[in-house]
Length: 270
Image 1 (cartoon, helix red, strand yellow):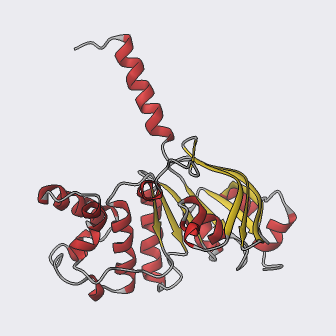
Image 2 (cartoon, one colour; image 1 turned 180 degrees about the horizontal axis):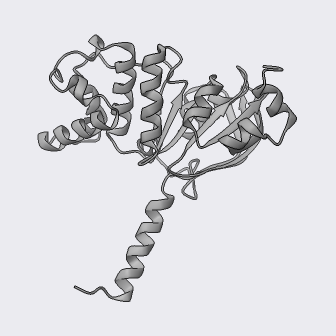
């Protein structure tokens, strides 16, 4: 069967839209806690379907920026901002935008795993149930796909109805990743997801992060520079609330453009 030029053009446009899905644009962004400025004039373009790592000393603004991308900081009293954050060219601060719909598009994995006191199965499908999905076959399929994508299916497929609290720390963190991606967000934010894990569990999470970029834009905050070097495509270095440098990870760790970045990478400060 032949396709018309119009059909081909439509297909090309659809493919282009899919390719750019999950791009993040941060423009001249300042952020304040009760008048105290925590971020200063942050501008960066985070590409879709890549892993971008945010590194820097404690208190430099990494997690603060991360939590602004899905407006988690809105839950704190006395916050304010200047500038803009856009996802796929649309501001996340549109007054007509429901924050719940934003958080469906931008999932979050926290530093400490936080499985619900429910079965493994119900943890994974929780977001779908909240969205009104109750068809069992749909939930079963989504559960298996999410657990396979988080490299956990083979370990738990025979005990899906058992409590998630019985899993090891590393398994719980992968379960939380499965719960996040089950609703198919465009972007997955990770705030130090390996800080409480042993080296073996950390290795599994890092392998998973590199797999996730096939389907999601991933932004990870980490204190572990080796981790950033191993599993990210691009790395941003923050210091005292300012973005010092954002470039390809290989360049950041071999030939950084800023002396502050070089000093931090080589352990001269921070």
